[in-house]
Image (cartoon, rainbow, N blue to C red; front, top):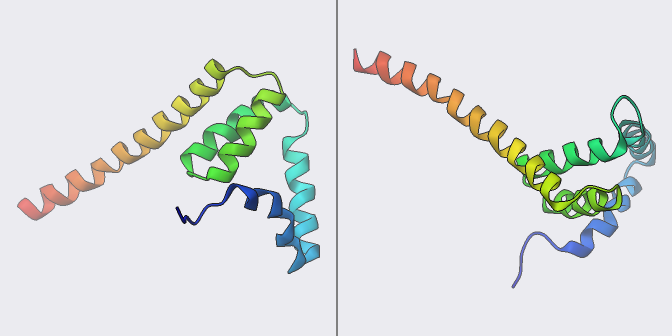
Amino acid sequence: MDTYYHPPDLGKFAEMGKGNPELWEKFMSYYSAVFSEGALTEREKALIALGVSHAVQCPYCIDAYTQACLDKGSNVEQMTEAVHVACAIRGGASLVHGVQMRKVAEKLSM
């Protein structure tokens, strides 16, 4: 089955640096700094990244951060909770936009 997403493409991510190495290096420097130990542990950051990966529906990120979470000591229950947090925020964001729909519907019904 042909699809836009091919798991081996994740390993080609660094090829994006070929078009503009300077910007790639700046991105990677920033990326590395963000994911290094800080006020949050690397494990906590991996769980956040896993949740965000689901919110933005990036299959490459889901694969990468599932592996990262396991490597950093998270278990499946913790990872599942991270996905539920992302789902709750995304669902809540959709619902709060329902206020806009209700305002427009109310205005048009007058």
